[in-house]
Image 1 (tube, rainbow, N blue to C red):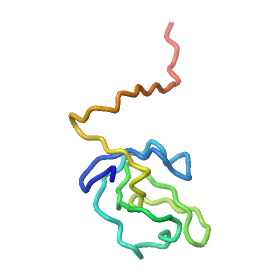
Image 2 (image 1 turned 90 degrees about the vertical axis):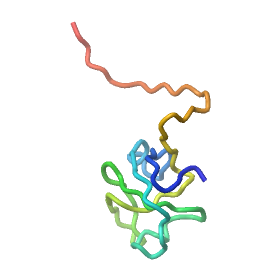
Image 3 (image 1 turned 120 degrees about the vertical axis):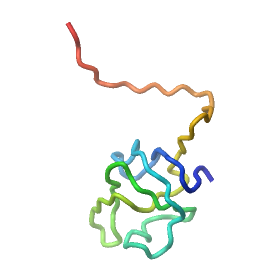
Image 4 (image 1 turned 180 degrees about the horizontal axis):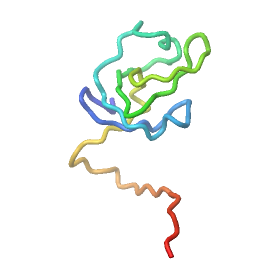
Length: 101
């Protein structure tokens, strides 16, 4: 598994692009039946996460749902741990910076 209870993690993969990059606290395992979005996930470990913002989901009824806390598959998370060394890959992101005269 990528994460453990108590980790701070970042969402690296999601069906919704706006979820990618969200920071979440990994609270513990997700217990089936906690809300109407369980059926939307394939097999694999689910974590109960609290977001620093809102997580977008599609409910079993097909409606868009925004929650501050909900399930996220382990495969979609990467933990952020103090002192952890990366895998050696450099990630470069382009950002829009204002121009200064």
